[in-house]
Image (tube, rainbow, N blue to C red; front, side, top):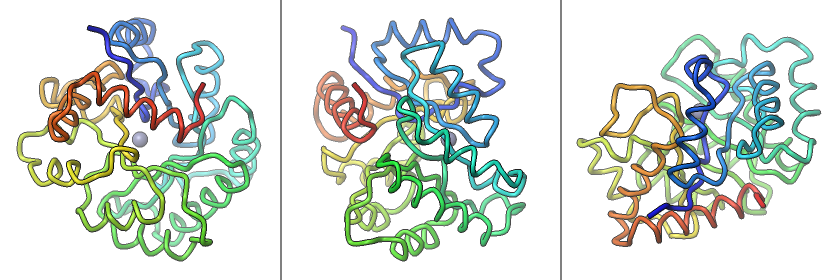
Length: 259
Ligand SMILES: [Zn+2]
């Protein structure tokens, strides 16, 4: 049976997809993906994602500057991102967030860009996409500082944090998206956290070409593999893969205002 699925986070503009993107999109369609949210990490990557969306209607573009790319952003890159974010085809802002794993971008520069993305998301009425690596405390305090009394529209992508972090993010209105990491054998605790997330806040993604799910671990990831993570998420919530696919698709359509 074909599922109805949405990969809410991948990087189709990555070099890893240069050679065979049409095959990748074909396999995505075969497995039942109706939309693929492709995320920019820099000004040029955001432009590439926009171009892909213009060529392939299945692609829904998100534009922004990833924390690890914040240092190399040219002075007018942010202005261009802000202009792109206004386009009706663009469904979100990001990816943004904080990363303390890679040490090359000073945290204050990352925080500055994170704040800009949150403001741009509010201005455009579109959700923002948060990357958080070894920086849960910092991400939470910045989100709390920037809160304005209204719930956030956004997503903690490729979530691998603690249950407490998930609860705080949920309280602030955010969605929680799970990637292939949910399928890794040792990640029992993450599956327990996933089981506690309310059904209306769950999303699935690949983060392709990175983080391939367990059966494909170590290989290039691709949007079609969303089905594997969906299956594990269905399992932890004790429902069928079809039911979980329908539910996460509905959530993704609401959050990113996909038609
Ligand atoms: Zn990403």
